[in-house]
Length: 230
Image (cartoon, rainbow, N blue to C red; front, side, top):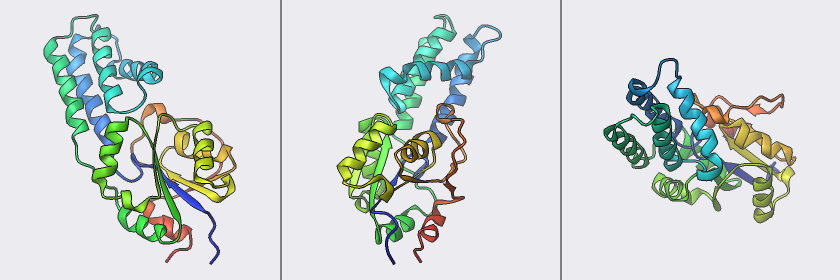
């Protein structure tokens, strides 16, 4: 059977392994810790998200950026009254999140094994270099990929540069991921292909309004069938 693509790219966080779960749990803890110091009428969770959005350009993505945003938001929300004990707890929450073991999502190893037997695979993830490298190394999945790419942002320019580096034409590239904003729309803008595999949690800053049509799978386990792989 003639291959449909020359290269298939996979997102990592919330596509191959859990990620947003840890952020969501710490957001809830943040609200619990900081709310007692907030003036009446302040939406503590929304204030944290606004701080994260503001800091993306300076600190990028990942747990370390999230930690800085939590500390900054706590000080701002409380107008400086938050205690050092709470700040210490926020820092420790982030440290614990960085040290969490990788939890693979269902079907991941067997899907990569099957698809990798037929196609060249690349991993494209964004975030903190140290943490993402640690997750890739400890996931036990790195041997499935010809390239491992950790990028600052997943936008059209980034994907264009990666496809050039891979030596693949856009029409012969497929991206698989959970984020429409980061994994689907930029790739399709280049004339490449994309498959959306939603995760049950999505970071608010990854939400995007769109009217594009693309393939969506209920589970990564459905990918081999979509590609005609037994």
